[in-house]
Image (cartoon, each protein chain N blue to C red):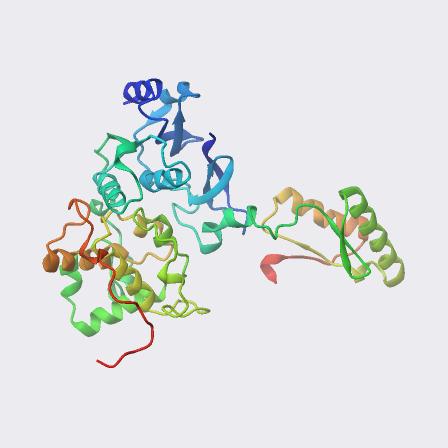
Length: 135
Length: 258
């Protein structure tokens, strides 16, 4: 028997609405708006209301996949990152660093956004950094 | 209150008690169990309005025999519980309640209304008679203004303690058109209003959850006034199902000749 409410913050956009996840028998069963949260004051949009659905979705990616010869193959993170790095290196050498752009997001934290721009500028060597709110 | 809950959990009168607990400064619903009996001392009556009855129906759907205790913070919680029991969503033998009434109803609180809304819309603090004071044309345009703000979040339905249908008419593409915002108005809101007849217990959670500030409660109050006048049925306090419980002939969506 495992019943609980877990307070959290909606990951969909940068607003940061407070939500309560309803956990019944260890499974995410529903989402409620946090009535006393100063940001959303008990209100949610349609995406927030249905947040529990994507957590349990069978379509959800649970491990990295690498496309090889037109098919997606399951792999581990080390392998996936190695392949990505190799491809980045190839592209930068062949077409120059400005052929790569980095898109960051309101869904991730301030610190992660900082790391992403650092990665773009210091590692890849491009100023092509943009944000999902401007797309 | 805490002593009563502790006793119930220890004696096994209830397997689970749904009440409120303050976590990180927020009063939020919490499940109290025998295994974590120490938590009962943190039980609070709660100024936040959640539908604990609706949460209970979700638990009852998974475990039909579980005995559930529910904290009722407002009179409308009791009425919602009655409606859910009448419509077989909860078994009254398995439900124990504690009344902790005393929380003021949000409809009794004064509201600041923006000038634009005052001129073009309808406010939450109105009663049906206030809205009927406008002439028909005014009333229609004011309602359409309110409905046009709808962003189809389904919050009113999701939060509603007495909404439990597995298939919702609001998601039926033949009844309510899809693909546009605002949704097909006024059909979207009127479909819901009709379904609230004989169901709505006037708790106001729909209005609280509405991001667009639509005075839904006013609409459902009017609908239920009609139910009371025509059928003499008092939603939430009458012991029987509403007059809309009889299934008629097979429903077809094609128009038929009268």
